[in-house]
Each structure stands twice: as C-alpha cells, then as structure tokens.
Length: 629
Ligand SMILES: [Zn+2]
Image (cartoon, rainbow, N blue to C red; front, side):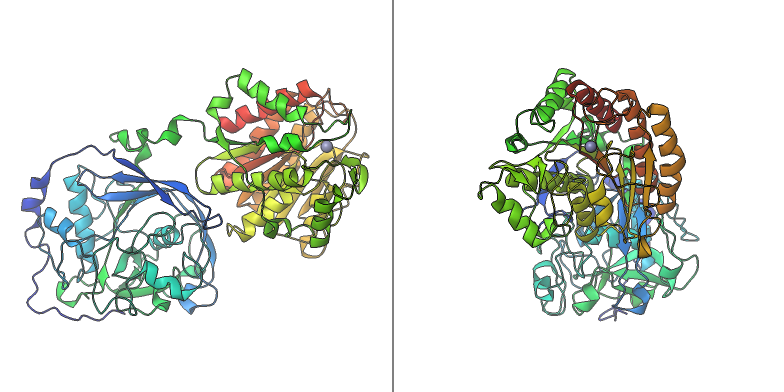
C-alpha cells in the first residue's frame, strides 16, 4: 500500500480535458529509430549487446518495442500472492521507455497533480482512472483509438491506442528475459544503480532516466514511482491465470501496482513483487509514490502506421540465422574420412551460389564457456579432449573420431555456435537459425567421444536454454540416419527434454530401439522410431505426422532443437535410407509448425551427419529455404 503524503488543495486532474487536448496536434513522423546497446537477458552480461528498437511517437515520447515471448511469471518463495510461478505468453507491444513525466501531462494541457514538481520527474498522485484517462487523451492526440470506455473503465485490448500494461506485460518487460530476483541478478547491493528507492532516493522522486536501464532499455522499472497496471488485483490470481496474454481478474476493488517507489524497501522493488491500491476516482487520495507508464499493442498489423516498423533493418532481411566460423574447418580428420571440412565448404558455396547467403543473418560463434560444456560432459573428459592431441593421440576414444591441434577449439566453438543461435532467437534478432558446425555432437557421451562427435552440441544447448534462458521444456528432434545415443543418454530420466529420434535400425551405434522409452520420471519422454533400411520420404513424413506431432504438441515445448543430420539422404555414403532433399524440406515444415504452434517459432537446427556432398548441400538448402519462409 502507498500512503498519501501531501494532497492539500489538489484539483481533479481531468476537469476540462476534452477542450484542449487536440491543440497539440503537431503530428511528427512515427519513425525515429535509435539503436541502443543494451544487455539482453540470455547471455553473459559483460559480453552481450543487442539492438533494442526505440520508437518515438507522434507526441515525442520514446517507447521500446517489446518482442513477444514466454516467461515464467511470479516467484515461488517470496510471497503468497506471487505463486505459483506460471508460464505466460505475451504478445508484442510497445512500452514507454520512461515513466510518464509531468511535462507530458502539461503537453496535453492537463493539470499536473504531482507533489514533487519538476517537468522531468514522474507524474504522481495520480489515481488509476485518471491514468487511464491520460491514455485515452494521448491516443486521441495521436489519432489512435482510445482503449478505455470512460463510463465503465473497461479496456478494449483490440484498440490501437494507449493503455496501462497488463500485469503480465509489466513483469515480462521488467524481467527482460531474466529469471532472477532483479533483472540485474540477485545482489541487492546493485539496486541503487538501477532504482530510486528508500535507501537511495532521499525521500523524493527524481527525473526519469538517471538510473541504469533494464536489459531491454526500460528505465525506472524499479523505484521512483510505483506503476499502475491495467489488471485488477487478486491475491490468488496466479493459480487461475490464463497462459496467453492474461488480463487479470474480472472483478475487484484494487488495481495492481508494480516496481516499488522512492519510499519502498528493496524487497518491494523485485521483478515479481505485487502491490495494490484502491482504484477509486479521487485524486485527493492518490499517493505521491504512484505513477504509471503506457503501453500499446505492437502496431505491425495496423495498416495506418506502416512507418512504425518499416525502418527496422531486421524486417527486410530474412529472419533466419546462420552460424558458421572458419575454425570449424580446422578440425582435421584423417584422409578419406567422411566427416571432413569440405562438408561445410560445400554447404556455404551452395548457399552463396543460390543467392541465399545474403538473405541469412550471419551469427558469429564464440567458444562455449566450460560452464555450459559441463552441463553434459565431465571435467575429466573435457580435460582429456584438451590434452589428447598434445599427447600425440590421433584419435579420441575410438578410431572413428580423429582429432587435430585445433579440434578442441573447434568443438568448443561448435557448441558455442549453437548457444549463439539460441541467444539470437531469444533476443528476437532472428526467428530461427541453422548451425553449420562441426564436429557434430549427437553421439558424444558424458565421458566419451564417439561417432565423429566430441561435445554434444544439441544437448548442451538444451541445458543452456533451461538454465540460462529460464525456459522449462525443450524438444529435440533428431533425424540423422543414426540414433543419437549421446543425446538420449543425457536426458533419459528427464521429463523436461523430449527426445525424438527417427533412424535406421538396426544400425550404428546399436541403440535406438522402440523399447528405449526413458527411465524414472523420464519415461515416455524418449521416443525412438527405428526404421528399416531403404525407408524414404513417405515413411519419414508418416513418422513425423503420426508419432512426432502428437507427442510434441502434447509436450508443448518452449524451444525446439533439431539434430539435423542429412545422412538419411538417398545418395549418402554411410546411410542406407532413401530420403530426398524435398523430403527434408517436408520434415522441416512439420517441425517448424510445431515450434510456431508451441513456442513462437523458436527453433535452432544443428548440423550432424550428411556425407555425400551433393546430397548434403541440396538438403541443407531445402531445409534452410523452409526455415526462411
Ligand atoms: Zn549420422
């Protein structure tokens, strides 16, 4: 609750509002784009830079384009009204970069109710209905449709004008991909860098934007003034919340407040902290610790405002990423070995020749940090990989996995490349990505290299998605002609990773029977579809439609990974199957549709096998063309 400090002699804010608001109708272009260097949620903080799109509205207010996505809302421990933690989908929207300030109110010629007077300070002593009314005025001033019915205060979420954020939108934007107590982590000592709160405010509000922003470039999400949300407050709401764009309970007296204020404790500034206040229409009771910021739906479907996104450089290019680095060519295998650098050279040359290269967003990988490699492999094994070549060893663990001086670096970078692709998808830089990496990964076990594989790139990425990005469930689809025994082993008892493999059987590496369904809690989260040699497109498509699709939709993944081996191609040197490039395109369509249905299209595909160059390059091309559509 927030206490009113000073309200003597205050006038109702909106007494003569309709007469004056349209006088400020200087309609500037809604096009000014700034690229801000900010820290994204899913990346090591010190390294990460992502472009956030800032849009300046017709009335000169900066808003940040917030990408759509899932997040885990609430907190399991901190307070009863914050639990249970539940997964929520939020559609894209624009959010004010700063809290609404006093000069913005004056610009619309509305009297300023604030106690701490300063044009750049946040507006305060504003009750919920007056905040909603300001949203309507701002909409009208910009020629947009007001969202609020001023008799009932119901919000029309379909309107293109301004409104208060839903509680889910507020927390999603505040967290900006983070899952920690605060968006900067859990160290409360850092809060003073980001917030004017009890220990840093000297008992008053301050001009907005002076403290550091959150990872998506939003300022003052913690402290300064608590912010009204559109939602009605209900303590038990999280146990009944909808998953998709939840809009709060239908009835109640109080409205939600978020973010804490200048007089709040550090605890009340946490991302998940919920507060409330009566929404009664009486300015005199409004607190000088309460303000707000506006949101509106992402305008890309609004035909009257094509400029809003037209200048975004990402929109004209394809939203498919390609991970590649020359270090992958430095992993040398023995003469005549089918897993050779020419595989990647062929893939890239073909993409260039077909004019696809320029349409892909190139993603530069860095070696994965050992923190992530260790989620799948033992330290002892990692040390062994690193030392093996120096020992003069020509093979790692088995004769089929040759190594060279740069193999360790290449293997780390192959895994890091997949993590870079995950980051790019999470940040909205691309919709999906293909990783042209080697050495491949799906046979690699915790303590052992095998089948040309050193580190299990896809398995490491699955753990990264869970631990770093905070997503719960990952689907791995493996269509390499060989069974991915390493990936199966990594998640065999884990119900949070659904592993689906279709492969030739019996065949190398010998695992992959239908009876291998998982163990313990992981039973039924491991699906093997063993197929006889010479199986072609029809058999594969049938397996994907009848076995993969229903299981995947039931599982409802938050992210989809593909172990994309193309050695089931009809001309492959090692495989005995009869899949064509068109067949791989069709399989890609099915998996992409699953990702679109379940998790906003989040999909990263990772090269595994594929050894006949023409079959490989044709198949990769067909695969990427579907990803780009
Ligand atoms: Zn294979």
